[in-house]
Amino acid sequence: MKTIILGPPGTGKTTTLLNLVDEFIQKGVRPRQIGYFSFTRKAANEAAERAAKKFELDKDNDLENFRTLHSFAFQKLGMAREKMMSSSDYKEFGKKCNIPIKTAKYSNDDGTFNSDNEYLTIIETARVKQMDLLKYYDSRQNILDVERNTLYLLSEELKRYKQETGKKDFTDLIQDFINKDIKTNFEVLFIDEAQDLSSLQWDMVRSMWRDTDKTYIAGDDDQAIFKWAGADVDHFIALRKEVDNIKVLEQSYRIPGGPIHELSQRIINKVQNRFNKEYKPRTEEGVLKRYSDVTQINMSEGQWLVLASANYFLDEVKELCELRGWYYQYKNKNSIDIKLLMALQNWEQWRKGSLLTHVEVKNIYRYLGTNVADGFREGKLFHSEDKYTIEECKKKYGLLIDKVWYDSFEGLDTFTENYIRNMRANGEKINANPRIKMSTIHGAKGGEANKVLILQDLTNAALETFQNDPDELHRLFYTGTTRSKKELHIVDPKNFDRAYIL
Image (cartoon, rainbow, N blue to C red; front, top):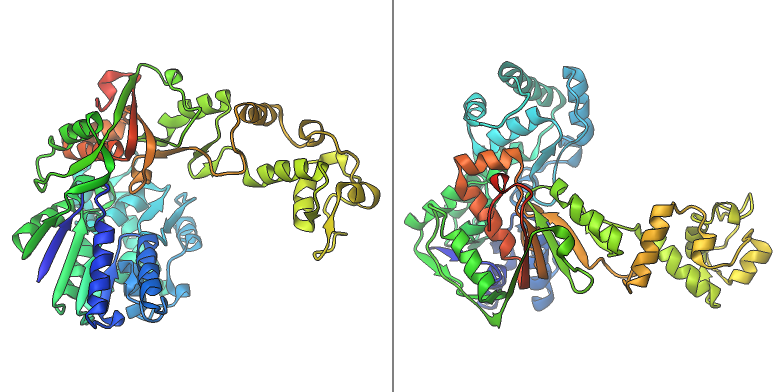
């Protein structure tokens, strides 16, 4: 029996799967006879941790089949980590072929391939799509500076390099798993975030469910935003002809009623190929606000998620935060380094008489410059078991100053000092996580915030995608608008002809 569980935003599809796991364990199904696979390692680990806690199981042994697909293939094939392609392998390959490769690696979290080299990206995407490389190249409309014959030759050279070195990549693992027809014999099989699976991964899933009595496939085709990376949402949608049951989770615990829900529904109803489904928003009415310019937005309070189709569109919001003294996270990096923030916090407590550990003192010394005497700046004379007062360090350990931070922290540039001053004047809690997080919409999938700000601008590539495959961008901005729990803020684009208009 195969069941599809469709989970619109915030309806709890993963929780639904985990509740089913609980039911089967309570019915006597052995944990090792349950296969639970998610698109990301983080999600798979969270599922295993919940089951382990509830049933007092060993997560690593009893729940060894709670994994990503590529991790499971790695395990079943008996691979060793040293036999996997690494970043250094790709760089060595680049030198051999005289092509520049700075970044090339598979994510340990979701198994996706990321590289700054367009040739490698195209090669890998064609593989997970199971498309002939040159046919895939010919189907692309927005490939720049990629020569067709060179692409083919590099693909063949990469095959030879892996054969010569005996190395495999994540895509090889899944392909080998399928080719060797490995038997799993699960009593129950769970697949989460199914809309993100590639054509190749679907073949692996099919190879597992042949020997499984019950299969549950959870996902939301409306949030399928990784087609560019090889995800095959059309395969997921086509499963409706094969499965025994389709269940729609109808209550969202995230999306507020009113204008936010109405806007998101108008967007997604534009998609041509989708599961027709409805869900209920929360009874609480959401707030929708529009602005002609970023500078009109007041983000001085609350938790914010700022979204755009590409990172560089966020630069204007980043500059606004710095001007106003708002603490933010950009590209997964805090606007002020956490070590500096800890040093500032500890310095103030130190001046008031607190004791600090040797680690805390050494961290402060990093920012004091010549305010620490020569020979003491590395903090090598401190003992790990001791704690120190500021007076003790002035007498014995080279500390030459005990003034307020902006008169003591010599290593700060003027911009950083002024930014921190503004943050403090605004009451920002610099010892906590940033209130404002900026991300691409792709990077924020699965996230949520009380207040969401969306920029509508599009890159050249996205604009071309919109013209050729509008469903992809409809899904993207639907996913963005449905991150909001209370408020949705929309900024007019710089150019309405180069934007997705919400």
